[in-house]
Length: 490
Image (cartoon, rainbow, N blue to C red; front, side):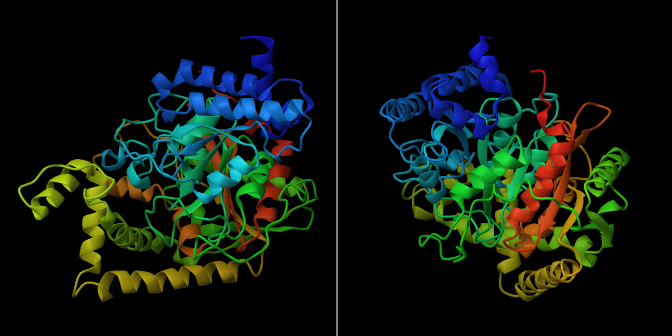
């Protein structure tokens, strides 16, 4: 590896942008570095479904022209970024990890992609994912599973496993994922990177292929909280194309990173430290609590009493919304299509061939729960419990500034371990789904390693639209530790 390539591999997102602006290396050199890394490693990792080599180099050349002519640059000028394959990119295939959309090329960019491009970021490719974001391991993709860069016999998490593995393996300095029940934070924990799920409505969902419309969030996966703040500053803000987009101002999330956390109250959620939590995770989280206490944070105990009901509540609501959202994929317009003697047969054969087993399972569960005679017993009841879970957060966050706990009950599990037991896979989301049900922001940061050498993640959750506080605490923790700086030998 050349000196320049070694230098680029060590840099943060902000440093890459700064070096390109100063002319220390070009956007083309930087982009080519990551394209070369993808060329070397992606065949084995399967982190990216589509590589945008030609488009990325064209975008990089345009940035270099701006630098040479000393014209004003965007805040992300020259920064390569990988986009989850469930987010639309104009002229670049967007399959959502499904055979149903394996040849779909959107005619437009999602709002967040447009904002990234307007800021000068360079889309380097589309990352692998569980089909339609339904999964916790990235084993449900139509192009096969992504492997964990720390140990390739283990999963990277899901559904944004491709994005997390991409950043962990230095195939891109930053990536974008989506989070419906933990799909940014859980793979961030499994791959040893930082993953932020913003408040519902903070980041536009326009152009995201919907799984659960009231639960879906878009956010960054990065090497650090500082990089996450940089990306969030660009993608956050109201969007008239998204009716659920919050009409709340978004500022520069980097400005508060270095402020002291002395006196901040951090609530340790007692329900996240019971049966089912691996002792290695517990030890790592307790040490992280000590680090934050040493920085001046006030550690208090708090409670989210309805935690045990979060997983069943989530899977009823998510499956019901999936049943509704995926009805549009019928083989008539832009999706995969199977022949049939009549319309009904074409529908049946198209969906049988186009959807994978997990997607079919969730569609059927949702359709059943919404059917006549069962709506009140399942969907309506789940919606009421969801409101109570949101009230738990309101109460807890009256007495503390944020809530701390493990991101996952275990480190990454082996490929194939839970594929035959969906319930075990679903229970892996026990600590993450509540934030989606309540719509509050949450972040996962690396905080240690298991004896097997697999990363461990700590989760911080905060008040609605208080991303600055989460990023501030995460950054202060990372200033005192080096877990986020470690890279797999791959």
